[in-house]
Length: 343
Image (cartoon, rainbow, N blue to C red; front, side, top):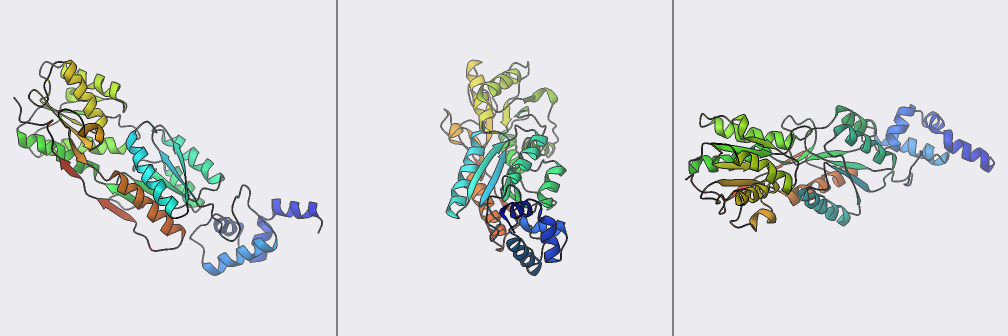
């Protein structure tokens, strides 16, 4: 066979591989995309046939022997939120130790964009995916399943156990902060949160506050809720709206430390003392909150542990090792000087 004929065979050989291996073209696709849903004997027949016919799938940047690029994709909601950077840093370090590389992308809380990006990364040979949160399009899961790409959800735990996940209970995090304030005697408690669309973490943390209030026969009043993008200026402006109420809340539960510190800035500008005039709590226990004056009471969440565990799970799955589908880490309230009984 001359060179031109061989190149033509390589471009159109999926059916030839299927015929030689005695399988369907769908099975050829699953094998060459590293799906785990093919028995070893069939997989080997397909690989042998592909090698004999010198067939290389379009866009493949890996050898037929391994069919792996050793690249893992992480698609996060935003690069602006520092805690996602801490998780992905831990993820990258652990992947590097195991001989894998990390490809990072963001979807700006747009789940359709997340699905589109995942498809692009698959085209470039990415082997597995780390996703943030529990909210995702069904089309994304169908895409990953069709191409045999392992994935793990992070920053939350799928209680229905539909999807592998590594994370913590976001409801419990805000619930701990709220119960702490209730135990101090607060009853007018406000919520400072990110928008809820495409963000199950924010929804869960709001639900945790409401559940803790309900235990005391209380309800979260709509006027005590303020939403803002995750940034200090936006958080400060949103908190200022709560502080301007005639009967302002005596305490604010912020769904992360960025919001909490923004609220502290708003209190200082309004001439309110923390915690004498108002108490503030956060979630995630970051250095940003711990180094404030007074220090921020916050809920410690397992940010770096999530990254390492996600890397370990995906590598184990890619290499055919035992792996744990669902891993939930505890959260713990760290009490500092930003909370006290109401005046």
